[in-house]
View 1 (tube, helix red, strand yellow):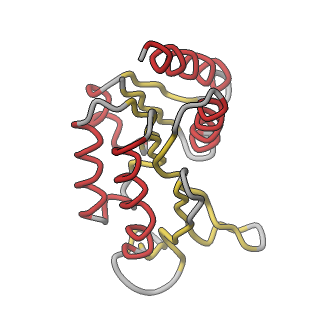
View 2: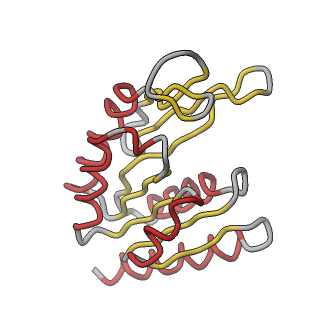
Length: 172
C-alpha cells in the first residue's frame, strides 16, 4: 500500500513521516528510506539535508549560494544528495518493511538517479509513505491513498496512516 501526504510548507509533513517511521520501528519492523530536513542558521533557512533512516547518514541536498543546478535561491547538491539517498533507497527495497520518502519534490527531481530509484520503489510491493510537494500532487494521487495535511487534521492523519500501516505490516 502507498500513502502520499502533501500540504503547505511548514504544516508538518516531515514531522509526520518521522513520527510514523519511529512508531513502526518501535513495533519491531524495519523502516528504510530518507527524510529531508531544513538547515537553519541564525533563524534563516539556508538549505536542506537528506538523512538515511536506517543509518543516520547525512548528505546535503541544497544550499543558498551560486552554482547549478538551481531551484529558486537554492543550489542543488546532486552528488551530496545521491551519495545518501540512492543507497538508502536501495537498502530499503532489499530489506525494509516500510519505505519512507520525504520528499518527492522539485529539488529531488534534479537527480536522475533519484527518479530511477523512485520508479523502482513505486514498482515494488513494499509499503510506502511519501511526502509529496504540493505542485506534484496530481501526479501521485492516483498511485495510492492521498492525504492533504493541515494544522487541524495532522493528528488525525497521523493516527489513521499509522494504524493502517501497522495493520498491513502485522498481516504479513
